[in-house]
Image 1: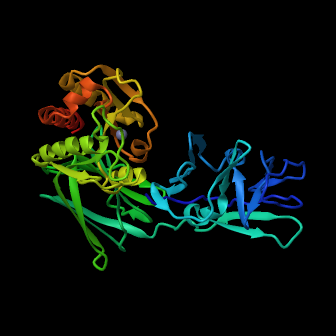
Image 2: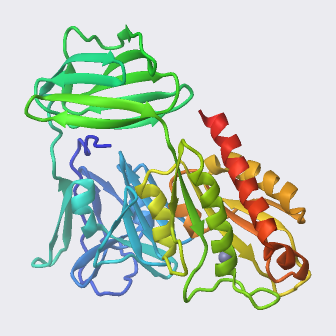
Image 3: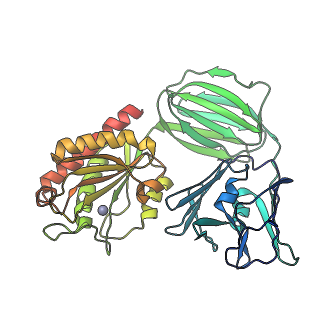
Length: 432
Ligand SMILES: [Zn+2]
């Protein structure tokens, strides 16, 4: 969602005598000035190959940022609606979940993480200028895009049949988000005012199969249309920028599910007791889940891989983000040095995933009859990247002769696939 950038300028001036690519001891000369207020930086600013780096601790002391955190290898910095995420482990940088290519990477020195602030100019809306001509070094982070005043007007809105129609005094691209409990949709029109006929906090009652009522809110420079819905719906937007009108066509919701068969190609995964590879077992089970889901009318299935190919962990989770999936399921077989270890484990990361994790785990335990090793919260990358309810299923231990014999059985795999599909149906019934 587009939101106002910082309404205040931010200027950071740091003075030291000589920057080297290595960590300098924090000296008493260090000065950090933020909006005219002097604060003491936790660590000196570092310049590497001409690019300025600030320590995460120093960033944390700047109130402008909502969150600065490091969990495991992931560094997150949030400000307003912008979330920057660096993964130190695999050198990825995402801005609001979109992968960004960047030349300067964060680095860790003596237990401190240094973040390249130069990269931020295009994401957070600040210019960064590094002046190495003077004895002192200054870094300026200043406001780049001033907040636009509201200039368009929402003139009219109609709800009829499968269509919602609105027009504005000049064309504004809508930003649409779904909300639940109760089901509703926000249509945000940036830089737009409600016309005097459409009052702030007013409710318009409609007689429609999809929409119960329409409400209006003026949020600073954004006009918000709230559609209160009977159930979750899909929609298509058809806009005519010249006519300045927008038509939204509503239809029955299709749940989008991303199935991820773990490993593939040169990454075989676990080696089974009798010599088989995890990558083959998981593809076989995942394909069975896919076949069953393709028979469901209101479900759309996506597969991260359909054959023996290799897909990066990030791309697996990110496919789910790209298609705006409702659910992400990664399927695996487990391994242990001790062949006596057996049983089923279900992993999740985001708290919102626990509900589905519990449902699918129960179904799996009932179906496999394997030892119940529980539902566990673990920071696996593939489920961490996916920004929706997601699970990683370890169906059983391929290194355990008993588990493996069952897991390689075709009928057993069909029953496991059915159990996963049953869990999906139960979950979505609760969701609608
Ligand atoms: Zn695996």
